Image (cartoon, rainbow, N blue to C red; front, side):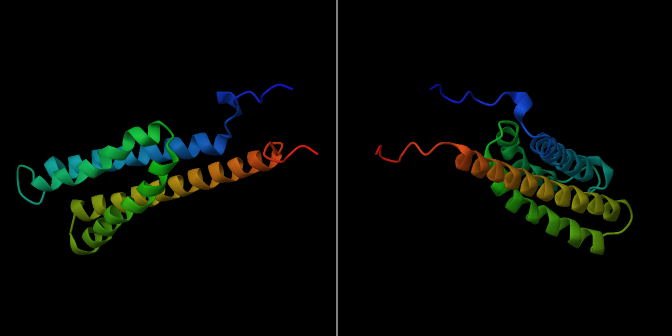
Amino acid sequence: MHANPSPSPSAVPPSIAVSRWLAVGSLVGLIVLGLAWELFLAPIRPGGSWLALKVIPLCFPLAGLLKKRMYTYRWVSLLVWIYFAEGVVRATSDRGLSARLALVEVLLCLLLFMACALHVRVRLKNAKRAASAAPNTAAPAP
């Protein structure tokens, strides 16, 4: 008997790869949007605002998403709701470009949440399928 070989990168289901890149892309999009919005596109104060620092918490999970850490995908799907709430509030209270940027923030948040949720769901389903397909090695020999 030989051990099961580790899955090759080509064996990764496309839905996992797509959800990963959607998550990373939307997270980077939120970081870029937050910086551009608060520094020069539509800052609260002329010349930029300290509100640009709101993107710092978004920078922490980027490495975890790129390294495919399941835990990171889970907590990012919770963190994103803070930015979603900010986007909804500013989309309904701000005017002009700032309101449109807030709508983009809301859309990026929804995309990030859906990508993280899909990624976690597919990986858990694949892990469960792999565990049920693997022989039970813990059972005592007859």
